[in-house]
Image 1 (cartoon, rainbow, N blue to C red):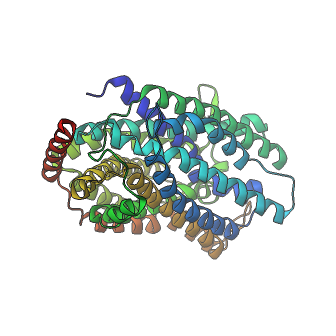
Image 2: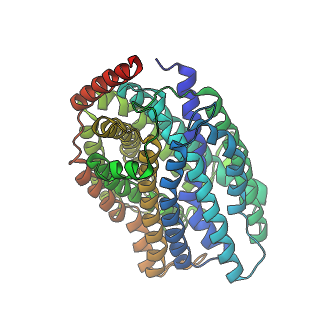
Length: 464
């Protein structure tokens, strides 16, 4: 039985990850184009190259983590060792050097690549921890729910407070140099919080599940088992598609409000003496709605099944995303309402997806006798980063294609493109995700039988 403090501790880990991840997804593109000073097409290409490499790096981390042995277990030590580098490199990523265009491009490639590698090195072991905290699929559903709930709480805090912090550290109507300082200082505040949360996750969690086979199998066997795992391939496609949907919507949101809604023409909304911009409120409201989706995921999926819950959520998100295109820029009520409904759907799928990855680990162990938790979770993380890579690259390239010009009034064609980023383009991702998940074979009944058989084998192995 997993105690409440451990569930909360596990949630701390994704709270930390998601605070930075949402900053990357929602603000890094516009930071590079409008603050750092890079052309959108160059940023799109950089995102593709660095994230494809980072996606390939994830399985390497998974293989190393599977073979790690310490008094803290296989996966928890990485939370302790890397929490401070994670925060420091994040700050460097949002720092603008006083260099020419070529020097800035090199700096951006170097810092962002290093940030993504450190992110993998701490996040892959964190994700893998789910597979060894409990063997019970229902416990995993609950842990996934805590994980995603805290992830969205972290994202909500980061997205709600980030631009107010930037404005506070920069000063009102500040020149671009002061704005750059404001961005760096704001990320530093969030980085300190992330490091503390990762340490809390390390201190409060425990590893319990031991493999049936006491000795770690050779790497070639791990890779062979992974490539022969059909449910994992299906989740790979679903995960890439879902992240294309998320990354396109998140990456274009600030552009949508800055250039289509023109949030500067709307009065700032002040709460508790803090002025909030519309784009920040929109993103934060989305995270709050994501939390509602996460909360609903476990009871609904336990009642009707993970597969049906996932498919229903993504089908609804597809229809609502398409409807987003026809919203007028002054119809803020409907813009925020559709954001809430789409975000509830999006929030519900990710705890289900991670729980399914844990099920794939059990399926593979029963079928082959080998448990490669880190490799399966790292490869799953790889699929999500690859989805982010595709979505972010498309955002940069299509901004250039539609004629986007940073800090200028946009053409009709550019506005059409920005509207597409929150409507038809993400709808393609949700539709593909539904197609993939419709093929997923591991039902709740099948997983119950797998759990019973694995427990029988573990008991027999102990008695030998």
